[in-house]
Length: 482
Image 1 (cartoon, rainbow, N blue to C red):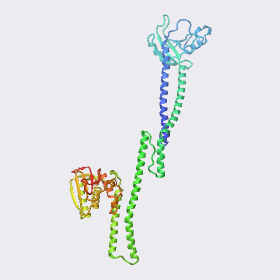
Image 2 (tube, rainbow, N blue to C red):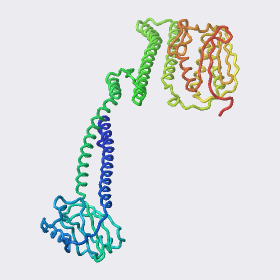
Image 3 (cartoon, helix red, strand yellow):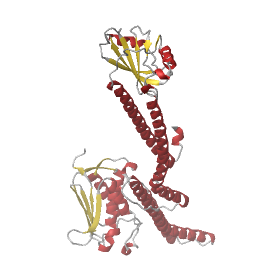
Image 4 (cartoon, rainbow, N blue to C red):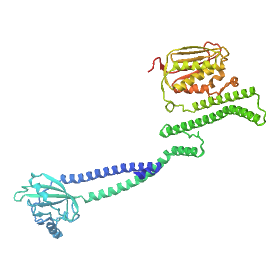
């Protein structure tokens, strides 16, 4: 079937539908032929069994040692000596008598056909009077017949035992069966051709959605215009395939849009430190080229700014690498059992170095989760860095971990309600905090790391209605390692 697999789907559907119809028609035609054959032969058999065969009595019937001799004598008999009923066409049934040793045959006067005797006919001699056997046979001219044999051991007083053979021609039956076979064959061929044409039309109609889908895929491959969709009709398999394609195309378009936005935002964020670095480097080069070196204090300040810009670039590049990881946990780092309270403790120690004038109030309970240790630690550090950045001098930062919920509360200006939906977007920064250092990626990394661990993170106003913001991270786990 390799040649079939190499054909188009439309051709395969047409062939398979035509083949299925052909098999059905062939089976139906064969069944019809065999049923008619059985009925016709049963009708002949019934007709033979309906008339009681009787031995020849009296007269001078034509006899011979063989059916051929007896038939020759019968045909040589003058027409005037034949019975009036035998002068026309041959009767529907033909009779002949055979001696017990099958060596002597007699025919009725006027017989035009004789029945061929078989050696197996001798078995009938053991039957009782009136019992008969029906078999297939033929006439001496070769035409087929159905023969009934009956044994009469004492046919009539004064007459010897005799085997009576009665035959009915079956050539009309075979002619009818041959005509039926031709008719069924013609109908079958016509039905197969009609099935092939109908299969072609059905395949063409059924594959129209597939053609539209193929055109859409080829259009995307040719133009790279992701987001192309096709109309969906119904709820069948083709509709499901079209819906899946539309979902995939939309996902690809969204992915490309996010990628384009990420590249644009990253380029914008990278431009600022790079521009500052280039300005500082140009100033240093120009001062050396003109022979007028910068004052030591100015040069020290300039180098400090360059170092800060390099650090900002390093952090930004690290954030971009973190966000470039796929969102699905299966393709990310392997998840292990992580002590969240230990991560929170290490993150607090690092935050104290970044906010030496701030007060950190910590209350954590043991809590173990399944996740990426490095990713979760960076998420907690980013939350604390965000709190440090917005806390006033000498302010307090509250860190709590209870029943799998880690909260970080600062006492800064808080977040306006209209800006809350955007706080976890990449590169988004509040208009009021654009003068502060940062790239707008910290909270995006928090959201991604928490999502990979199967948790959720929220950021909003303080629960007590006081100043500041409250970040809450909920992670599934338990107070003991599993």
